[in-house]
Length: 54
Image 1 (cartoon, helix red, strand yellow):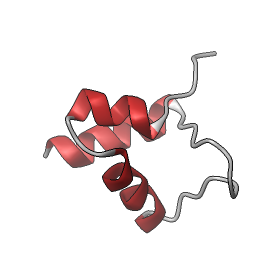
Image 2 (cartoon, one colour):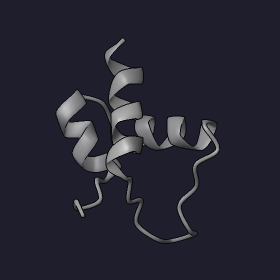
Image 3 (cartoon, helix red, strand yellow):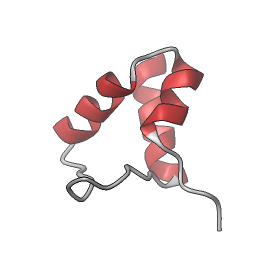
Image 4 (cartoon, one colour):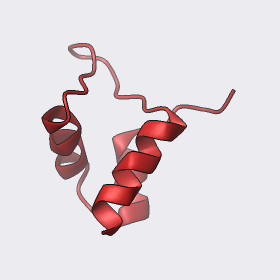
């Protein structure tokens, strides 16, 4: 099993703010538990990459 990926890690990779990524995740209906760290699966992270690289 792979390590979860955080919006912060993706923000560095994609040169975006973590807030932008988290807002897009919320817009997709994905939620983190309140006051808990966002942890994305590899598949979710790939969807974020695809969206912001296009």
